[in-house]
Image 1 (cartoon, rainbow, N blue to C red):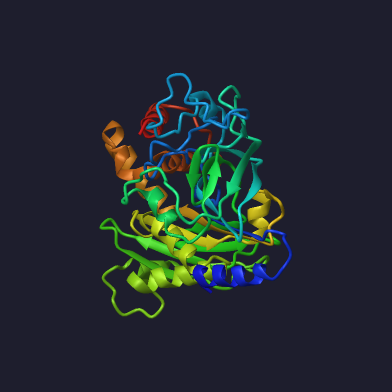
Image 2 (cartoon, rainbow, N blue to C red):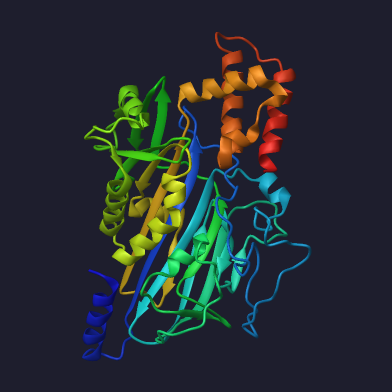
Length: 421
């Protein structure tokens, strides 16, 4: 059912019903993390993939409750900074293992109506937003990114024409507008959705660890993913994908090193298990529609993150979170209560296997200070933190004692370089 047909049906339905305004709310977003061979998420997941427009509000910025005008940016905050104007001490004092990327909330109504929406992130905080919220915590005066609580007061408009802030059509933000949702207004700010981003920490309910070349998948009880894919992107930006089936609680599924070798062989053209190109995009699109999104919403999400999913080199898992996992990690309250609320989130987990960790460790030990941190890409910091753990594990194998030395200082320096990227 596409959005246009939905709106026509909604108009016909509400035209003969009571004066109660109908409200449907749809949301999509991505949680991005990196796990090592031990299956644990790593700190350092706060680096940006794509720049946002300058009008997007950064950490702690809100609307004035009296004038309903934006309060303005404070201090020496530069909105073009990668870290969204978050004080450095908050990053240092927090364990950031999840980057909540671009949740977008769409509203569908047969008439104009006020709506209040509250999003909580118990183990993190909302760090960027548009339109601006009326309240948000923590603030830049706090010490950690935790106990996030952000409230928006908007007017869902019935007009189909509105002047929006200009966005370069190549900017990642622009794709979310290609949806036939109602416009919303907060103060003087108008958009087709509520957009927000965040940083935080939690361990995914889909557990992934590796032994040698194999990958093992196991879901926590009550958090079985709807659908799971394993994606490999080579250094030329060519992607291939397989579906991982049968994951459940107490039901571990292993993808063998041989299957992963085939996935990584981008010269192999005849493999019925491997998807690429249009087949890959179409499969993920249908999965998102199956998760409750309209087709134009699913396409907007795919257009927004296709570069991160299918162009950024690396081995990654893409899975659609169960509704219970979404609600536990990111509780959302809408008032008045919507007739329908659909939330479709993809967990994007960057995966380091044992062989990759040991290869990077060998490169660092041989190249020392000449090791090029930038060669590890956007996820250099969490990768280096995990490889440093592996170095200490190797040093203490067999019951030995790790005595800090020159290699430890080298890792500290490399991680600092990665943090400053």
